[in-house]
Length: 317
Image (tube, rainbow, N blue to C red; front, side, top):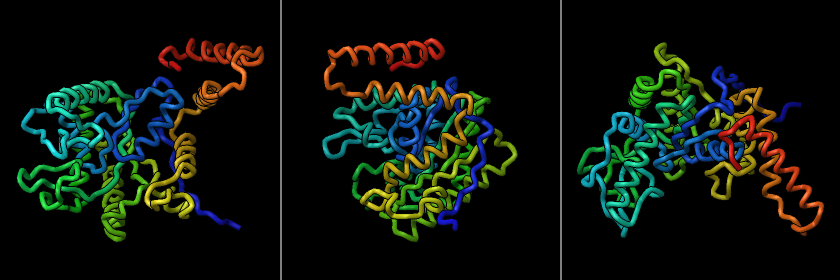
């Protein structure tokens, strides 16, 4: 008797390895995958501008970074005793305009540098619902709790999503023709938009993504079905946090296991196991740090670290 449907997953033809340089941009699910990759000591750059949910926000960031279009003071604004940018998450906000401007342009330079050399870009799309600032007509990545009356809420059609992603990928390929782009839809439910509205949003993202995958000019694209795994394999509220919106740790581990099996080079799986073993060893709390047993344990652990970092000098613990 089968009690679970299985989502078919194509193994990535562009696997991630310990020689890869990975940039992850997008929703909070990008942070979950990025944290797992970082734990296993892959080379990662994770959301330099904080969490971004909408394809247009991601595209605007990528295009701006690659065009070396630095932020200017007049683009920033003060709200609730902090300075913000409508193009970045509130995690990036600062207490002064000068500090924020410096930070934004530093992150812009980092994004440009990493996209120019990365082997992989992982884009996690969160929602097709977005906001336009009424006064400027500009697209907003984050409203920063500014009153909603100042924005127009828009459900972006698939055609516009395709256009935004195409522009971003085109700009990246002009400076880095070898990069592989992973596309995935976040399994987080945006229920504040409404139940039907959330489904419409995800449908627009899925339609746009799969249409993009069919386009001949876009080589080296791969789709990982994180949303489908959550909705069709796990399919149970016990895999959600108490808010019934975010996948819980068990669900994240499950989806990560699928990602590892299909997106990580088979030759590097043993190295991942070694890294995880070292990480657990480093996290171990000794009852008696001065005991012979613990001293021997630390010595053996250091040897494992030395052996691994001899093979992979860029890894550090």
